[in-house]
Length: 120
Image (cartoon, rainbow, N blue to C red; front, top):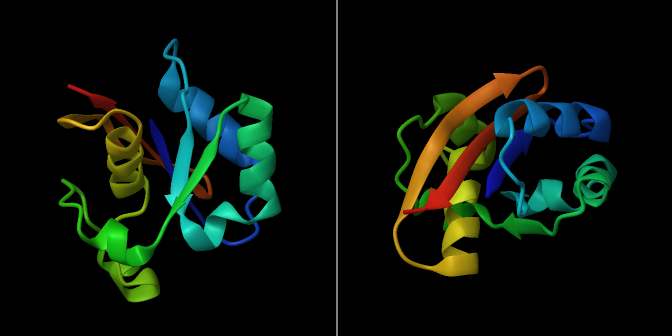
């Protein structure tokens, strides 16, 4: 599952390019992000272009996930230390339950932050 953090108004082409760069030859099963970004046109269009569902999680849910790379700036802006890593973990849990591993930690590509989590 791919977790995505992005600035407001980020274009779908930036999101898709970042996701494809992180995935390599892996398959994308869904995009996950903070709920306030899940309704943005760029995120919706990116999920549509990738042919995957888009999941949005509230900051309270995201804040409960312990991640390896929390960011002070994200805490200040959203009240959670992670969007990309935490959303990827939550998406994995929602789709399959069980243990989850972050296989690609948050990686910033232009205006997009992407992380990849998989069931263990």
